[in-house]
Length: 245
Ligand code: FPP
Image 1 (cartoon, helix red, strand yellow):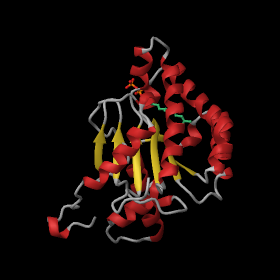
Image 2 (tube, helix red, strand yellow):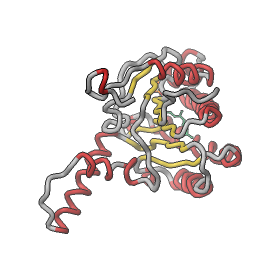
Image 3 (cartoon, rainbow, N blue to C red):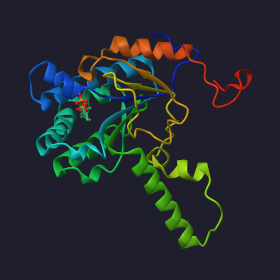
């Protein structure tokens, strides 16, 4: 697809519906996540082929620890599997991986796989593929505020905290490259909420929803939504003639 005038710079995806997909197919939930990982692989390559600059997926939230041990460890095992099977293709496609979240709390083999994924794609200059892992928007903001407080206490700086200060201390701000706020957030499976995903950064994001369960979400549907973004009018709180995009 040729890039459009209003092509999103950053698309966020809430990959929802793996569990219901598994139920509909009469298989364990972990198999739904496995099918979800296959879908994620296809969408990453589709995003890269479209020339998208940033794609962020919500892979594991700070709230997902409440699920059964079997399901949680099944998702973590998928990370190891993903890195083993996909690293070469990601590098071939020039995909640069970045993690948003405290992934050092995951099991050691998952952490080692993620470190390898990040280090081996560090030289890639194509799509920035951000994986939100053990990520929560409120947790991210709380961490940013606490870091700011600690810095200010240490330096005796009593000046008011600004929005820019907070942005700079979020995972997206601490990253070694610039991750802009998402232009578009897509959620699959018919749920109409954002569930603590990029809470600060999504203040002005366009939202799109589809009833499709994540494992059935195709590159064609993804491309359709990315194209549909061009028809959205973004005003960022201003009047029509003042709109930025
Ligand atoms: C939400 O569906 C999905 C998740 C909590 C996990 C998503 C994980 C993957 C797609 C695999 C990621 C793999 C790597 C390598 C990062 P749900 O379980 O909440 O579905 P439900 O609402 O239908 O129960």
